[in-house]
Amino acid sequence: MKLRHILAALACTAATLAVVPAAQAAYKSEYKLSIVVGTTFPWGQGAVIWSDLVRERTDGRINIKIYPGTSLVQGDQTREFTAIRQGMIDMAVGSTINWSPQIKQLNLFSLPFLQPDAKATDALINGEVGKDLFGYIEKAGVVPLAWGENGFRQLSNSKHEVTKPEDMKGLKLRVVGSPLYMDTFSALGANPTQMSWADAQPALANKAVDGQENPLSIYAGAKLYDVQQQYLTLWNYVSDPLVFVVNRDVWKSWSEEDQKIVREAAIEAGKREIVIARTGITAEDPALLKEIEGHGVKVTTLTPEQHAAFAKATEGVVEKWTKTIGEDLVKKARDAIAAS
Ligand code: X2X
Image 1 (cartoon, rainbow, N blue to C red):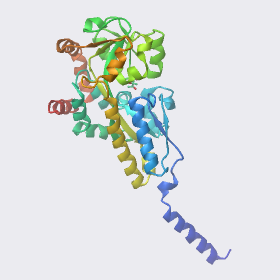
Image 2 (tube, rainbow, N blue to C red):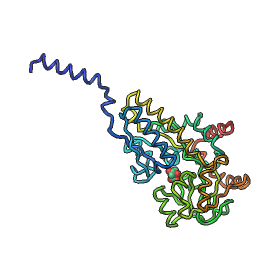
Image 3 (cartoon, rainbow, N blue to C red):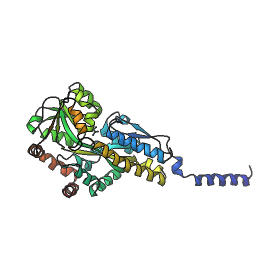
Image 4 (cartoon, rainbow, N blue to C red):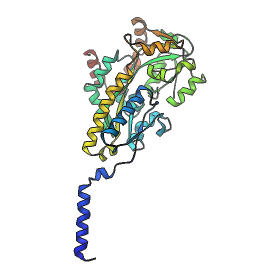
């Protein structure tokens, strides 16, 4: 080939490279999105809404596949955040509880009896506290986009009604993976044991444990009334939000236009998911509670005095974990809740 031709070919290649942005060349044919539960749960619905919106609005450039059951980390949900950071998982809608082992500030939402109601949770996630927490997630190497909700966690067991801390004595309870939960349930006199959600369901079914704590949408969605979880105490002791996130390298590989689409879709999906998560579980709208009672479950609502007794019994846990989470952040949270 003559030099003239070689130069022309090189110029041509350079021009092609210039018009195809490097980012778009690196798009994957499929992005793996992790969730802990199935797609029929409000949590899973949030993931479905997000992926559908993204697929539509990017004309299929970003094609998300949902992996329920935290299957990308063999069900071990406390390893989910690390797997997102390392790129084994591209995207996730995850609970703050499951990522707390890596980001200690996320334990905030698990401080017993900090959030009295949904208004308090909203004040946290939509205010300064939410921004700070997104900063910590970002610093840990993952891109946070929007908040969702798992919800207020209620206590169920197969043995007897629970109305006071003394009723917890000897109850073998499955708890989630942050050590804070071991402390809370030990302080209440129960016998907590930490296991993944994947292991919890067979453990409840074969009576290896007596009880568990989870939002009503999870209790009902997993049909825990069918595994003799017949005593349900509504005590609203903690509420875990969900966070919509993307692995940093994946995020950087997308065009600005697509980043905007993914972010806006996450915010929209999060808002819709929160509405779904709160449906049927209030005094004004008790449909899900009624359905649960229809399965012969004894649902106990605590009086303010009974509620206070549980809060008192866990004061030491709050004190200990406030130090881990950060005094300033906890104070900011308390102020935001007081103003809500
Ligand atoms: O494991 C649980 O209890 C669950 C499903 O609620 C979470 O992933 C935090």
